[in-house]
Image (cartoon, rainbow, N blue to C red):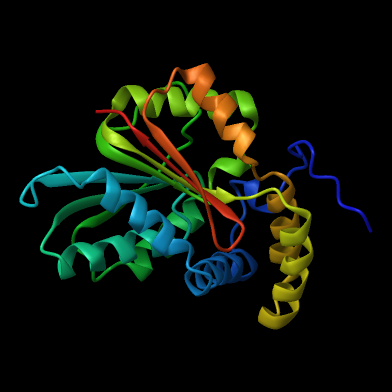
Amino acid sequence: MIVDTRFRSEAPEMMDDFEMEGEILQDALDKIASINQLLGGNKVTVDGVKKLLENNPTNKIIRITDIGCGNGDMLRTLSNYAKKNNLNFELVGIDANQFTIEHARNLSKDYANISYQCLDIFDDSVKMQACDIYLCTLTLHHFKNDEIIKLLNYFKQTASIGIVINDLERSAIAYQLFKVLCFVFRLNHMSKTDGLISILRGFKREDFIQYAKKLNIKTSSIKWKWAFRYQWIIKTA
């Protein structure tokens, strides 16, 4: 079967239902986090944060907000990194699904510097607190192009240091390899279906270049990373 990856898919994912809850969703969240860890995905985001902080004093409080935080695995990874390197991070996870937020809180109960908020970031009545760095790890592909422009424009205006995007490459090879991962990790139906859609909703380098042009972003770095994803670091300072 030939997979067409010329354009971003707009097919919906089951996980985009903010009312979803229960064991199937929890299993999907935890499996996504495990696979992301195994394939080095967390390292891509941590590396982006490190690069943004290269010229910042180590004793400064750094406020980091993770959009679409899932089960909070990325925030716990950053908290551990900060502790190991004597950094002072204040970490906030945002997700529109209340069940997901409660699961993340439960898993993060031993992390005093992590908090969570259930928010729909596209609700115009909701105002997020400004922060130093925004993170989008495997989150941006859930949105349509016009939503991405709106979101990144807000981040650009309110992040005092920068933005780290870590998301999937839209690739036929990645699509086929993910089918193998589904078998190896025994992913449930929702995880398998959503995962394949996610790849087709992913990005090519040209997509990020076009977003940068529309947003008049002057200082950024777009790099391909294993496994089939892009790291986009945007400096706002």
